[in-house]
Image (tube, rainbow, N blue to C red):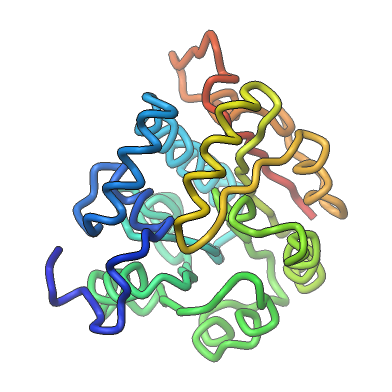
Length: 265
């Protein structure tokens, strides 16, 4: 890793979910502990890299659709380490004036994001924990860039399965829903155990070593996060099935283990 982007207080011995995801996407902002966990994950799920890429592709498609509908504000919660095709790149490809706030609690993700986005006055990077949504919504950088009286898109992509039941993930989503103006959107992707319960249980055990857990949920449980939102077609589906690009056909979408959907208020 480039030491310029590595804060001295980072615990390199404990795997970070953001850095494991970075490794699976082909990034190099990760430590040996992250690569060790990712190697274990690849033993459990040899297609883990493909799954990570499919989740990222879902995010990009959702952002394009939302930006195309006229929404020009995005808050990416649990944004992770920037990689090619970031939210601001996709959104501003549709609307050059689109504004994006990235939120994460991983020191490396935040430091790297700030380094590559320095000087971009339409983006901001906030170090915060999604388990405390009130702090995110009140943050000066967030309120300085996002006008909550206008439609905004909240992105919780591969984020809520890092929240334990006792941490009340429903309350997290409700906090963002309650401040969202009509026309706002919610994007969620989430690990599910419905197709491969044994495999997702093994993944959960691996992530017990990391900075956050991996809590799989059922389709019905994930759908409840959209209470108060109108779920757009095609509904809550395995991520390759959500408005795939022309020519993209997936015969076994359930092998991707992650459901994704978009809601509109």
